[in-house]
Amino acid sequence: MNIDTLNLSPEKNILVTGGAGFIGSNLCEALLKNNNKVVCLDNFATGKKDNIDHLLSNSNFKLVEGDIRNLNDCHQACENIDYVLHQAALGSVPRSINDPITSNQVNVSGFLNMLVAARDAKIQRFIYAASSSTYGDSKNLPKVEDTIGKPLSPYAITKYVNELYADIFSKTYGLETVGLRYFNVFGRKQDPNGAYAAVIPKFVMQLMKYESPVINGDGTFSRDFTYIDNVIEMNVRAIVSKNPEATNTVYNVAYGERTDLNELVELLKKYLSNFDPKIADVEVKYGPSRQGDVPHSLASIEKAKNILGYDPKFDIKSGLKEAVNWYWENLK
Image (tube, helix red, strand yellow):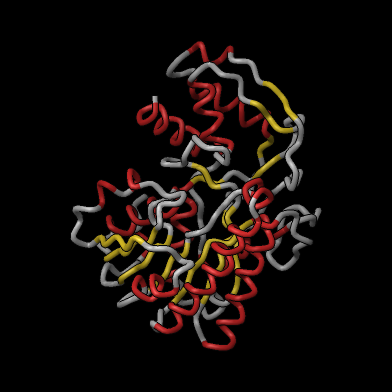
């Protein structure tokens, strides 16, 4: 994504934690294209060297191989940094249910380490990946930032605790924080492999192999799927905003439309069959609903529009076309 229209000064030094991951590596690329100096902190637990190999020769890019659970690593990464984009986390509701301790260590203790390091380094603004899972059992649609329910998984608890800690660091230490509640982000570089692969890349890979994708439940569960370039836009807007209301708060990051899983699979089959007509005939299968899943998710993005000027360019269809093209070119 080209971010030069968003008026981010190339003089700014930016740390991206989890910078070798799906979202983090896309942020690193966009910032380097803007001629920013970028530091990537990653321990490669879920991030991949392949995502950043092509960046290592860029003189504006620095890799710090370290772990946010180690405070010294966090302090090292924050040296001479203006802004932090904190993406490092252990994602996945099922992973947190299977191993709540590690999820807590990374997502809560690691987050607190980063806040402390950012405070000590006098970072100008700390922008962090929050999560739509924070809405928990709230049945309100669309989801509005000020109304949440009880968390439905250990992962959701960790992401809510992040928001509480960020709020306290803003009020107690004057650290400017901005939380971005991501809604089902998808796009280039999202890993299709592994037990906790996100649904879109997983389905794409299965369809390309003529394997039947398995939908959890009856396919009527819906999500506000959000293309990666919309997420990049929001991170940069969170950095550059001069609005006095912009900080010490959270925003939904989404497109503002929901798509159910049955519709999603049909769109994927349609776009993939442009490359291989046989994919249109692949059968879809159904399995049990997944523990901790909320039935429906839809974001209000009015707050982000009004305060940050958020203007997402990619709806589900245009985003899926881009993503499918990338997967076909890179993973076929």
